[in-house]
Image 1 (cartoon, rainbow, N blue to C red):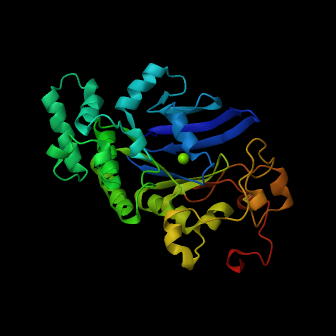
Image 2: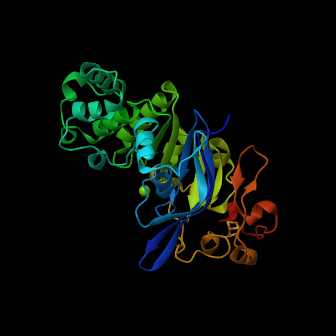
Image 3: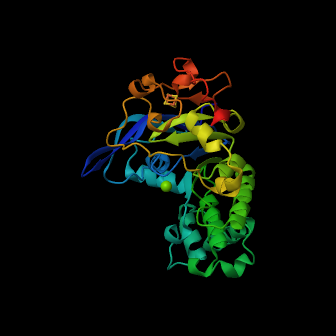
Length: 336
Ligand code: SF4
Ligand code: MG
């Protein structure tokens, strides 16, 4: 079966007063139907830009230089704004990071949710309201008949995000995109929301793409992981392959465990020494070379191409994998 979402060799630049920023470079990955795929990376890695490109919500200064985005077999990048509006309302929906800014403060939930259902022309207002109440109940909002006439500011953070999920599922979308869905929540709320999303994804047989810097969330929620760094996909594959056998030195560094910071690590990407390269002038070799402990001369000169590892579908972009660069002796992973 073809994947629901297929991103091929996508290149996106931002025009800025200082020149062009190469925000996405040769990004390729796919989201299989019925699966959940997590896109993980630091801020500035390009993970949000991928969402904006897929949903055609890129800022005005963004230029899609080349590449393809196929959704359900159709090229998205050539769609008109009105075609895209239809798709965003009907087939793709987004759970945003901060419901306070994505929900309409002056409308109560009944109004917002019946607005979302405006395309369901065959449904009466009473039926729409009933469906909205059912969905509120399904996401665990107690007493939905009376809560539905409240406004976002009357909900706690966790309840607001539950309402956000209810709204995203109302139209029974084919693709649900979650943009750092638990960032605004405390750890307990976060765990509840993750479990809810996992349950709902299965129940609704939806395809899920989650963007996050939270490795724990990706591990719990996703079947596959895409690791982004400095605008490139540097590793992708099955969630177990990536977490147990990371191939790329960047992914390895992310997963190395500092027991004293275990709890933090579960929520945030660990800090790796060095800076993300300036994407006005990406390095000519490997993007990770300035921070990589294994970097050899070749790494600074030649950009590694994605290599497929023996495990089905596990890809990584690193010269170590084709054997042209080797780990210097005394610099093994355990010696660090
Ligand atoms: Fe490190 Fe070289 Fe691999 Fe880049 S290509 S991640 S610099 S070893
Ligand atoms: Mg972001």
